[in-house]
Image (cartoon, rainbow, N blue to C red):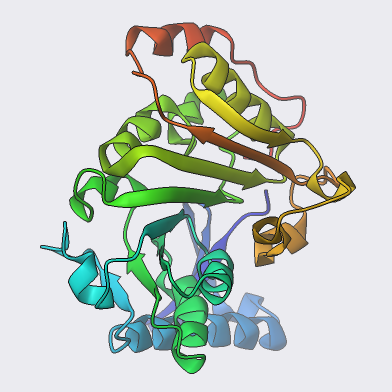
Length: 280
């Protein structure tokens, strides 16, 4: 996966320095070492993020680490329609796309990146999609925002596959997260995974098998199917990037209808191996 970066500047002894963030590393670099066009590009990117972070604070359809929302979403949406949650929603293409398709259902995208959420939230506001909202939060806080059985479906769309074994518990289909989803899903509630990562696809199939979950649909190449349901035709920014370079989009739909015993996590871990190509 390509390194993520941001740029910050400060002045010391009449010399401007750039703090260049590359993933988790921080490099102070004298700004004169940057070509002026590149420096200006970085500066504009940082400024745009700050503007968008500030903008979503005034959006009626964005809540940041909200408190007291458990069991209150019917008041927020002013209806009692079923709720679908999109995890790691990025720019919110799925929440917005599903909101357009199903005006009689409510959709909530969750992501920690406020500058990404801005895009989906603004589109929903511009189009008057009152059934679409967003939460800025880490994924492991999800039980703070919904009461038991309040969510009918969960979509996980192109999440970071966290390929290294040491990061397996950060995969959004790891039992660690599935146990959280069980606390908010209604009986028979569905989990959908759409990913370009064959490794995450196979890992999730393994989880379904080991824990005896009910698999409803699976495809290792949805666009090769003669008929595709409309929900799968929604394309996100990250789908277009084809980061995994697999040239395939994988899909799973399953129910969290069984207990997820902790002891089975050890068996799951014993099945894991590093992929041939680790993208971070």
